[in-house]
Structure formats: structure tokens, C-alpha cells
Amino acid sequence: MKFMVHYLLIVSTVLLFIGCSTPVKETVLPSPSPVLVKKERKTFTPIHRYLTEDVGPFVHGERVTLIDANATYGRTKRGSIPLEKLEAQRSTFQLNIKTTPKAEIKILNIKPKYHKDIWLKQGRYQVEVSSKGYKRERVWVNLDKDTSLAFALKKAAPKKEQLIGTITWSSTPPIIHNSSIYVTPAPHKKYAWNEANRVCQNYSTTLFKHTVTTWRLPTAQKLLQLHSEENVTQNGLYWSATTDDRQPNYAKYVNLRTKESSWYKKLGKAYVLCQYNGGVTLRESVQDIVKSLASETGEARKKERLSLYTFALYLKYGNPQAEDLVYDQEKGLLTYRLISKNSHNAQPLFQKLIKQKTSLSQAKILKAKQKQKHLTIAATFKVTEKGLYFLDATLK
Image 1 (cartoon, one colour):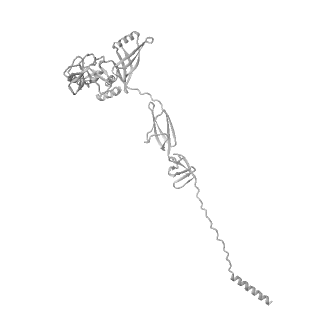
Image 2: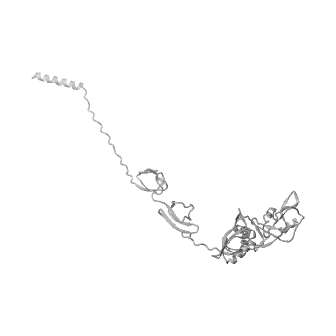
């Protein structure tokens, strides 16, 4: 028994010694994992906006849906758009105008010119559509959406031209050749060259009820062009304005019948033919000549304008002539060409086919007169505010 007590004591001591000499391993508990707090993202509600101009694949006025946005851009399924190019409600709209026939289109209350599918701010616009020969139309448009307009213009009634009167074109005594008029102040009198010059410079006469005071001696070249004129009756020498500084005492003369031309002493005597031109050329129209004459004289009243038109008519065309007379006995019609004596490039400046009702006997008389150069032609023109218009013509 005593022995057992000692044994247990020894065993307890040994165990105690072992426990003290071996370090006790400390159990380390794992630290808890950090908890991730998930931030809640704000949900973007899609919104609709409108383009204020073309941007990439997007066009002005297009409605787009933004699915996301930041401070400067909005994102769509087709791409991003600067927010400055978008607006919540449309403020501009397209205006398109079609016309029949083609016409000029104006928007009267704005400066920009109209063009197809023009973009305009919301508002009221006055539209004008006009075309020559058609009635002009004006309408007000309230533009608050894309708008298309169509105009079918109506033809305008032709304006009645104010008739000033009528004038007659017939063969006249003055010699008229290529926009110049020639007269003989004293048909049977001869002058020295200096005196002939003064005669033309001081000459004044009324032609076709129009007073003409600007006359001069024609050049030798001009006189030579008149050699075949029937109205030149003197078979003699005519003074010309052609001189030569090397021969101060001589001037050229022209024989209008024989086309002879040579130098002659200025103290010698010859016939005088004075020329009026007034700066007129064959290229000018009758209306242009009238304007030129009116600006010089200040004539504007109706009677004066008729005289100006008559005078201009002769300056432009010269005397009338009739050619190619043909009589149709079955129809009783005499057909002929009414032409002007003045021509350009061998073509008359005026020509008209005339049909005149007449008898066979009268037609024969007219043809005989034509051969004898005694045919009387009378053509009538009407004069309006816009110009000169041919009416008819007769042969006698």
C-alpha cells in the first residue's frame, strides 16, 4: 500500500515535469473575412431627345433615345452624341415647297434665301411664289411641324398694251441708206467747198414731223454708196467731206451716177448733199433709236413719240420695197415680199410675206408699176408703250 502511494507520486511528478518542459502550442483562430459592401448603382431611365443638326449617322430633327449619359455626351444604341446637339423639344422644322410650273420662291420676312427642305425656327413665315406669265401668290405659314406646300400657279391675263397710235412706212423723197438720211438743201444750186460745209451745218428741216438740225457733208465713201439711188436726180459732181492735209486746197468730189471720184479745188463749185446719222447703227433696234432720239430732244408726248418712231423706222429700215409679186387668179390674191431697203449681210433687216386681195387687172397694173419703179407701198405699224408692231401693207 505504501508502495503504491510512492509509485503514483513519482508518476505524477514525471508527468508534471514533461508538461512544463514542452511548450503548449497556441491555437490561432482564423480572422474573419472582410465583408464587401456592394454600392447600389443608380438606374438610368431612357429619355428622348431631338438633333439640332446633323451629327455622324444622325440627321437634323431626328428623335433619338438616350440609354446613358454623362456631363457631355449621351449614349444611344447607334453611338454617342454631344448633349449640346440635342434638345428636349424640337425648335426647328423643315419647309419644302413645290410649284407648277417652275417658279421663284421667296420667304419675305427673313433674310436667308429659300432652298429645298430649308430648316426654320418655329414661327410665322410669308411665302411668295412667282413666275413670268402667271399670277403671283403669297401665303402665311405657321411653322410648328415639318411642312410641305404645293402651288399650282394660274396664268395671268395678258396686260393690255396702251396704244399710242399708228404710223405709216412708205417710200419717201429723202435718200435713206444704211441708217443715214441724205437731203439736198438746194437741188439746183452749186457751192464752193467751204460754203457747202456751212450750208449743211446750218441746215434745219422737218422729216416725218421730227425737226432735224444735225447735218454734215458726207464722206466720199458714203457718197459712192449712193450712186444707184433713184432719188438722186442731179447728174453732176457732189462735194464730200474727204480732205487731205497734204493738199489743203483740195477736197474730193463724187459723181453719183458714174461713181467717178477725184480731187477738186475747194474754190470750185459742186452740188451739195447733206447727211444725218445721229450716231445710229443698223445693230440698234427701232426702240433703241427712239430712246436715243428722245434723250436728245426731251420729246415724250404721244404725238411727239409717234414722230420719233416714224423717224427711227426710216433710220433703221430705209424705204420699203416689194419683191416677188405672184398673183393667184383662182383665189384672187396677190402675194409679195415686203422688205426693207437697208440690209445686213445681204439680208433685209425687215421682211414680211403679204397677201393682198385684188383683181387680175389690178395685179397686172401693180406688176407693171413695179418694173417702172413707180410702185407705191404703204405699210402700217401700231405703236404701244412696249414698242412697234406691224399691222398690214398695201400696194398701189
